[in-house]
Amino acid sequence: MEENDTNISKSSKNVTAEDLGVDEIVYDAINVDVIGFGALNVDKLYKVGHIAEIDGESFIKGEEESPGGSAANTIIGLSKLGCSTSYIGKIADDEEGDLLEYNLMINDVYLTNLIYAERGNSGKVLGFVSDAGERALYVDPGVNDEIRIDEINPLNVNACKILHYTSFVGDSFNAQKELLNLLTDKIVLSFDPGMLYVKKGVEELKEILERTDILLINEGELKILFEDYYKEKLNLSDDDSLSFRDLAVNVRNDGIDTVVVKRGSVGAYAINNKDEEVKIPAFECEAVDTTAAGDSFNAGFLYSYLKGYDLAKSCTIANWVASKSVQAIGITGLPNLEELEEFIEYL
Image (cartoon, rainbow, N blue to C red):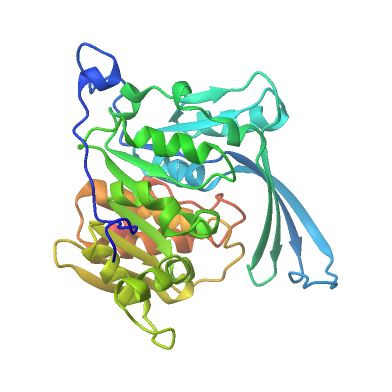
């Protein structure tokens, strides 16, 4: 590629106390395992017979309201597994904001990094879940998209072990990119782009991808984000195809230490810079709601990463956590630490 072309090779930055505007970096300010940074939404889930196509109809069989957001689901999953957690997100002074704050609080997520808006509305997602567990989501971001870098305390962020990024609809994406310049090298960045960010393309995501240590992405998103990029980089024709493994290997070779491909009911594939490469089958179960399956998988994987488990064990645990989650609505099926430890005994 030309010199000015996009390249996602891993970058690093040795942030100093001067960069942060302090005399000394204090790493135990709020010492948590994982901080999530993503949208906070109240999910209003409607149970339907099937997801209606264009000009089609379906009938609502029931409804349920629950707090959500991709990173929030993962953070709560980690908290239930015994990890210390905090969250960078923004809520308004409304009923939805109260519910979102309460949900984090009762799940032992530290609220130190939560941002409170003086006006506006908190985020909402209208979701339709079919009998088969399929879903269709519609997002009203509200104040989620108003996060500014000066509302985030970089000292708190640099006191965690893992910083987990997920997507925003709008401008808070810029705050995520700006925060990267304030991270020390010791922070592990986990990134689940979701379809919202995948549609931005590699060029727009370049800054985040360059700093990413763990990429958590589903198979379809991996193909959309990277296939054309690597076809051009490898001088392949439009008729050539790249498998999910081809793409994951190239992403790993370009500097992302660990690439995890979530493959739904098939299971998971992962590769890292320690020459580990695994395909782990999913656990058979009856899916009630797949809305938080990927987020729950992330929780299981990041828990395992913190424990230092190898890729095979990490993906097995992640698949198991996801399988527990999909058997209930939202994140109500997330397992606790006692259940996980009982499962691990049988591995």
